[in-house]
Length: 140
Image (cartoon, rainbow, N blue to C red; front, top):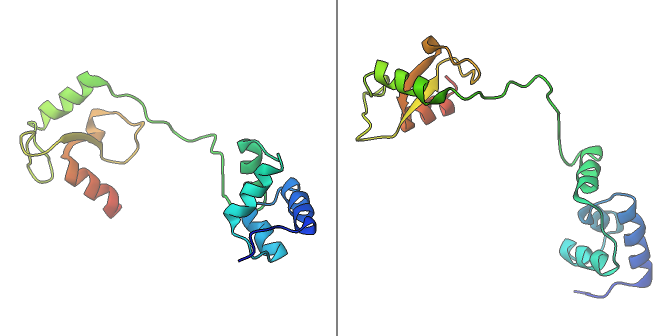
């Protein structure tokens, strides 16, 4: 494999990199026999860098990364240790699904309707770690 870049290749690489292309896109566009990593090293050796933010914006603009900012996203709220203890106590310190205790499994307080901002007592239940993970993966 040819590890040397010609002067024309270097100029084209520089021009394309400054236009926002990634090293992979440059390799594909110019049909270079070099690895993506060798192109990255050469760009760095030329002293050309771009901030991470610019690289991320370029990736979004070119469709390499999908990004959607969600303004109305609900954020998890702390329910507090008192509320956790009340739920664990109410459920007898046992998993309501399989009956596991704190001696056999880690108990967790789970949101029944999956809304992590809804900390009403009727929306909370005690589950062991396995049941809680199983509920999450089963889509219930």
